[in-house]
Image (tube, rainbow, N blue to C red; front, side, top):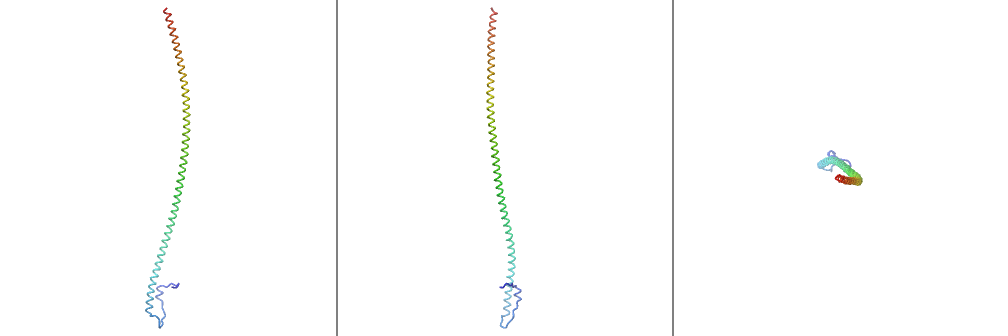
Length: 169
């Protein structure tokens, strides 16, 4: 076919010049009618195919848009997931560092408190020893006082006894 487009109407309206030995007019017209019908069907099919093509191109464009949207959503979701993981990792590291620092502070405080308790125990032992020395000294002085009173009582008894003896005589 040439680049010129022929429609059903062009075929039906085509007139041929007659000649003495030409084709049978009825056969040519019948053939032209069949050709025109066939061209009409092809033209309608072409229009329908064009419409279908446009519809499919629109759908394809819509699907590509959806695909792009899904890809962007997946990329965004992956980035968000990576960000969440990174933030969670940072939070975990921060919590661990804070916990370690806190435990070190607690240990340092406990060691300090333990040292203070040892000092207190040592001081209490010194106070106890000092108290025991003072108590022992006090008891000894009281014993000496009692001993001296016993001696005095003994001396008084002897003197009384002598006095009684002297009185009897």
